[in-house]
Length: 296
Image (cartoon, rainbow, N blue to C red; front, side):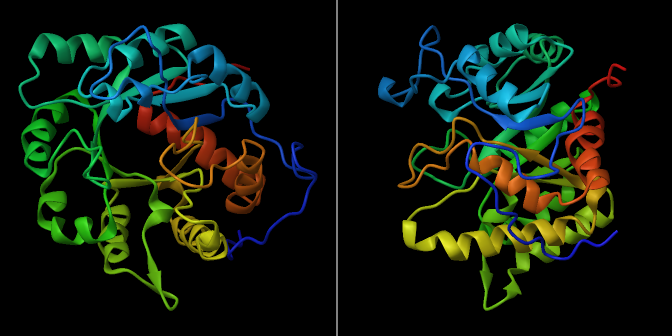
């Protein structure tokens, strides 16, 4: 199978690229749900409108993904009720959750989260202004969730991965590197963080997740697309450790928001053949998040 850097497949906006379909049981492994029924931390304006489960179902139908992983938005702090509610609405057989926790979480809450479909915890250090966790929380929480079979999801910058590589290497639970294509490249040379991630992937201890595009400035579009293609090509070298998520309803703090139709563009580029699509969208999420067999 040739995993050279994929080229753009032109297509009409709002339609699937020619010959591109998603296999049955495909999983969108990263979305956020916003629901005003649940109290937010800080500015309530950060609870997005049109970010409910009902709103997401429309995109889900468009993409053709029947399985979903909901990640608790930082606007809810360490209150994961919005995620448990979304799992219940989407169906426990087809939805999983990634929670944001504080080390003082009690065993009863961990058991409730597990029973409700949560299978991982997330540490968001990328943007200190919105982070509700810090690096000191990683080790104690990782020790508590390891026996439960959960994973640790790290939304970290490349320099943070390098600075805390000893901590990352010490974790006993699986590690998911979030928004992987955001790790920078300089003049075609991968950042040292890629070496750290590579070793963990090759040891079968980590996963990487590609997500919808982040653009801090319209002028960065071309460079961003190049980084995305490089990251996708590199990650495809270990295809059994890669998952994908739309990051719906997309980053709210960025200047440019990707159109939902653009998601299929990127999937067509990142996953250029049917076997790779099934591996990344069906088999890998089933292994990482514990989904059952795809119904015939």
